[in-house]
Image (tube, rainbow, N blue to C red; front, side, top):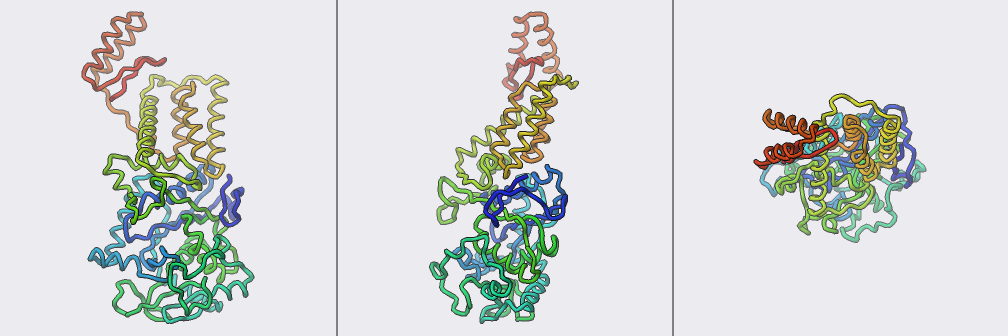
Length: 474
């Protein structure tokens, strides 16, 4: 299996630290509002990677965090240590408590997560449930000598980290190209423009809804510390895979690495995997552009969340993908076509598995191998779909074709096993039998009469197949 590693900037053979076990962590949502379909493209990438690992026989311990404190609005402007806490801001705007905001949007996220058929991790870890772990990690960083205090918090000293550990800060990103102050006011108390907050002090103690006592004073954790603390608690000081959106390569993930490795002295994560942003009508998604959509928005327009999943599969997770409703409609129609084929295969009269010829047996093996090759080539889902459709159109027996689809769906996650075959009334079944008997006797006039009788109410379409008469519910 091969995967692109953002740390080395190349596609590498995946070799876990302790095979067949794999530790995997994904940066989840900040629950101050509904997750967008753009957010879910990242979580879809993580889901595909998880499914692919399991498809290859790995035992995956999967963790995803939920950020419910400490993520400041300044992150949108290039400095995650400035601005207002997103939870507190949303609470003021909606006249609710920050805790209610967190619970409400967490519940919506988990609902949409399930609708998209994303495999749940072993744990969804909330930042507010792990305040002590975050404080403990900051204390360890402090003991190593990599912190300093300013009027607004405890900061990580990136320059000292580089000098004393010999490690380079920011290997994942192009931070050397970022100039502080271009969009935000320079924090003159920071020793280095790349330094970042580990613990923030409450400006006016008692006014924040989310604040905790700490060795440094009343306040709340910086955004970055939660992922280092929680991932190491559940996956160990060094683990295999960390997934996130492409924007997190710039500061959040480099900060995670610095925090963890300053304490442990060992590699934090072996493989870093980042999904590319989703565009909408050729533009970056943004509230100011009025092009932000959620799963609920698509459902209100009549689209299934699984149709969105199929749409995501149409491009590699690292490639640019442009969302339009025309493209979603096309994906929805293709998915419905696939579901109809699955229903037809389930209804097939080939109740007993036919003996495969050597040629067809080789075809089945070939489809399985080519599908696996596509999946294992850095999650090449467009190629995997192409193999699937080639198999669907092949002449291998229906039961074997259905088995192939079920096998492929372990990775694709289109819920093909759950496609239901609608009940056909006994009267229609009787007419199907009579029509097949008429055709066997070459009585095509009678067969045509029966076909018209079946179709007269407009509920069914009659199809002639090598296996006999097939009736499809319209």
